[in-house]
Image 1 (cartoon, one colour):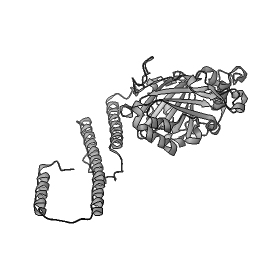
Image 2 (cartoon, helix red, strand yellow; image 1 turned 45 degrees about the vertical axis):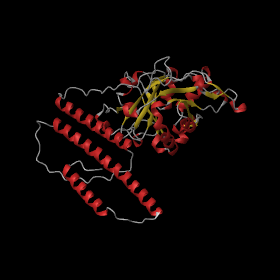
Image 3 (cartoon, helix red, strand yellow; image 1 turned 90 degrees about the vertical axis):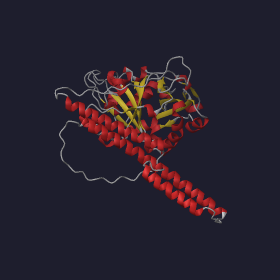
Image 4 (cartoon, helix red, strand yellow; image 1 turned 90 degrees about the horizontal axis):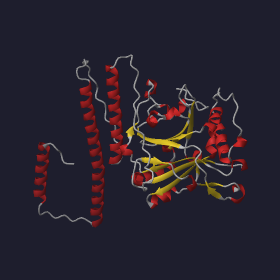
Amino acid sequence: LLPDDPLPFAILAAVGATFFRFVQGQVLTVQLDMLVLFGLSSGLIGYQLALLVMGASIQDSLQHSNNQYASIIDEGSPRKNEISKPQPRPAMKRQSISEVLLKKSVQSLRSTLSRESNFRTASLPKIMPKQIVMVPTLPKFPEGAPIGSHSNCWSSPISKDFHVRGANYLKDKKKVPSDDFLFPCRGCDIFLTDDPPVNIGRNSSILGGKLREVPTFIINYRLPWGVFVSYHEIPQKFVPYLRRGNGYSDPSSFGILPPLADMAPGERAVCNFLLSDSEERDAVWKMVPVVVEGPWVVKRVVGGKPAIVGTKLPVSYVYQPPEGNLADYLEADLDIVSSAAARNILAVVRSYTQTLTIDLGYVVQGNMVEELPEQMMLGLRIHGLDPLTAEVLPPFEDESMDHPARIEDIDENGYDTD
């Protein structure tokens, strides 16, 4: 908290020395309760003042760096003789230093990427198309490696570790190990952004640019600091139901759906899920979180019991039909920020994410005999994510995507209207 400038420091030191020389030998009687109150008050004031000063210092440093970078980019260009009015500085919210650092780093990186993109676009001929920004996707966990030996990667969990409703569950309430996942996992991404978008599937850079090579089910976890996205392949047998349920006329199938009688009970449940509207999907789509390795407190909070997703947090579904050689996808956007329960769990888990191994499974609840036994729809194992090492969300290819899709941009059928 001491000033860095030598002159103010010398003045402060001189005043302090004079003050202590004046009070030398003086005696003051103070009651114990008043002394404790004064000590606590001084400590709290000092703590809050330190946060404000350090946060302001971080903001000024980043702003100074951005100004230097902008002056380099703009060097040699004609400058207009304009006078800008100083803007009042917004009041700083009470945040931890880590939150301030993360937020400022995201804003700085986003502004830097924007300036680089504008500079490069201005220097290129207009006839050249805009390049897609490729970012690395999270790697797969090495097969056979012990749990905890690698972080920031993913793998497919063992489906039999998830227990689902058995064939006679409606009578005996017994659960059995699940068969293989119906939608194999393709990978996952984690991005930093101060404005988590819906319909992130429109971003051509995700999954290493390979998202639309095959029909895919996307789960987009919209978090306070960014997004975590997982991708799961939709096998061809389910594609006609996907398209029919979202109002797309599939010319290749002539409007004929494969018979449900030839499918397993869990497959029938998934087909009915794809044919349903948003409310019906919310009523049967269950998440099963299991902490494989982590602190006891996290295992206690997460639990491991199945939960109907639509009753715990807002979910919006977006369908993008096939376009030429681009396959279609169905995206489920989970708004973690809007759920108090999800925020509470996230507050406990975030301190241990780098050492946490967790399985996220999803299953369509079987409420009829024809849909039992259940079968896990999809699953993903996450190995020690560190958000501070994540990439900044790359810009969308379409210029109109400067403001990513919002919930109000999605119509009642799940199509993007922007």
